[in-house]
Length: 139
Image 1 (cartoon, rainbow, N blue to C red):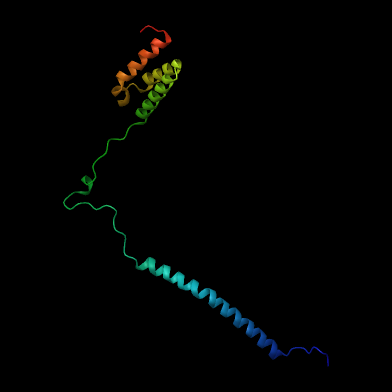
Image 2 (image 1 turned 30 degrees about the vertical axis):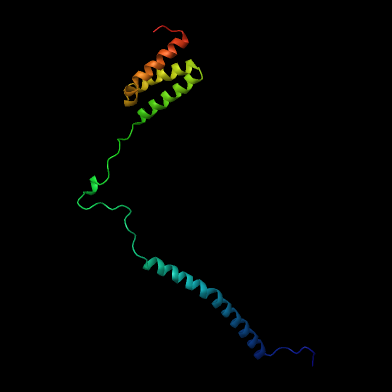
């Protein structure tokens, strides 16, 4: 008989069962806590109280009037007129009068009917006078 006897069917079966048992214990050791956490998260999400609204409307006030109306939105043309005027002012600070002249001409050509232009007419005229004087133009 050889020194290393072949293992019997019963021994192989016993070894396989032992390995399977170890794998099952490992699955339970990892899967159990994971399942507990998942169930806990689901329970917290399901059983938590509903959210409250962020703002409450006072009693007796209609929801439409509960919020004070803000200023009307400014038009794109009005914003562009303001941007051109700010560029003209910055160019005047650096004495680049041809740029100032260009910005003021664009404002008058494209944005003369905007609320910004009409409300800042005196400032625009003063900057126009400074520009004309700097460029040696008679008005």
